[in-house]
Image: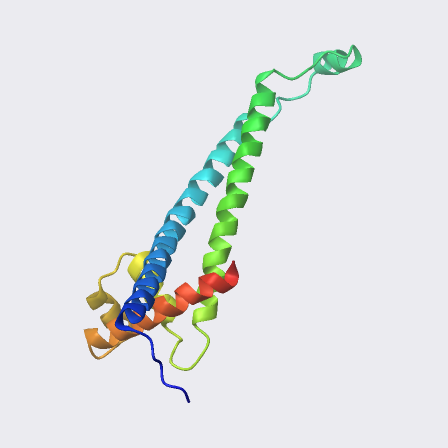
Length: 165
């Protein structure tokens, strides 16, 4: 085995890069929480638009209009359809972002003593639990133990995000 012969500056750059990866991972977890909430709102808005755009009961007049090649629908129906399409695209974008995070969270739970990694990160950054509360909920003996697990989980999550891109 060859010993590392890098300078102290090299070591500091590596540590700084790892810290930046962890900050980005935390940011992704926070975006994950926001995307989940936004997805609920978008689905609700889509349902309201779909309900507003339901066609009225067909009448003889609407069939006559179709036969004479005039539009039986109100022009605002196109606006509703366009808005529904825009919302569906936003939903698809949010779901793609959510899937990337969820894939990375599944990856980090694989391995020895890793089964709580995703739980720890979700509780901390999505649910907003304190480390003390996480310690209690997961049955760890000390806060230090949960901090150690948290740091390992965050490092592994940052790497998993790179793999899922």
